[in-house]
Amino acid sequence: MSVPRPRKRLLVINHATTLGGASLSLEHILKSIDTSEFDISVYCRSDRQDFALHLESLGFNVIYGGSGPTPFAHFSGAEFPAFSVSAIANVARILRDCVGISRVLSKRFDLVIVNSMTLFWVGRLARSYGSRTAMFHRETFIRGRFGLRTGLIRHELLHGFDGVAYISEFDRSAAGDFRAASTVISDKVDPSAYADIGRRQARRHLGIPDGYYVLHLGGASRLKGPDTILRALELIDQEVSLIFLGAESSQDMSREGSYRGSRLRSHADDYGKLLQRLANSATLKERVLFRAASSDVNLYYLASDLVVFPSSSPHQARPIYEAGAARRLILLSDFPNTKEFARDGVNCVEFPPGDASALARRVNEAVRDPRMMQGLIQENLRLTLLNHDVAKLSGEVDRFLRGVS
Image (cartoon, rainbow, N blue to C red; front, side, top):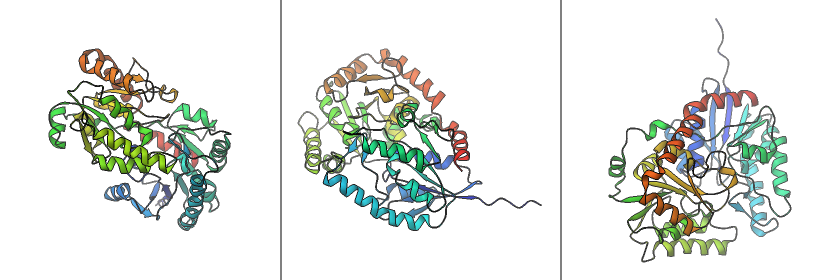
């Protein structure tokens, strides 16, 4: 009689705290891992527990780690000048977090995975305890004035990890990582979550009244371009309203905008106040429907008429595929890094980043002639089912984990 082989001990170190896109992507990955092969634990921050509690409700073992791990603040949408007080403080927090994470790593895991490029500093630390290491990259590279920090990150990806899973070929090429153990695993969606629920039914469930709605995701993060859609809304036909997912009120938007708005605190405070002022203006006050971040994001897609993702910087994000699965038109900022999955006039509508007038013009075109957009919607659905169906994920993750462990 054969003795069952003991499961490998797997530690996943997570950077995300809220119920957003990165969290949902990690949830999909965790669910796709073969639990007969791996005993999974997830290391999460304890100061902001939304996602950690959600994982516990799904039956995952969560290890709480204080206020860390601290992401290295040098990626598209978040950066500090290299020698600024903020950059130095960021590194100081990372050094502090090394102590807490080391206590967990000392328990000797077979494989340690970090859920973001911003946690590249964990790689060598985990290896010092004898663990194999892997990364789900997630972020888009940014180059500073001299490229020193980007060079450091690339070096650590290649020398601190046994393999890295990127979410696009664009990001893999930017890293210059063509090792056999590294791969591309794009974000996935569950098509069944968008089936058999009509717009009217979704609105009843969410308490959304009748009307024509544009959906904006990402809350008040400056990276997600909330100021662009609010400025555009002033120029969009009056019958169109905005579902602003990720903030419960204009006051909450102001707080979140200040928290996530800029590399300089004074500018961040100004950005939060700008968002609040725009949302409370006479022309918009009755047209913005605020909703907190939700694990039922699929219902918000289904309740909307079209989706906007006006990111201010290059950003790989889930809304392209989620809109595809929901059969909703998506309008997004025109950046090179999204061309792999979204092309203007093929499966989406693009506009210049930060150009509220262009966004408003494209929204008005879609509202006035929805039949013109049906071909884009159908092609995005086809590409989503072909490339981003969550049913494909278990095989991709299994091959990746076998290669790195």
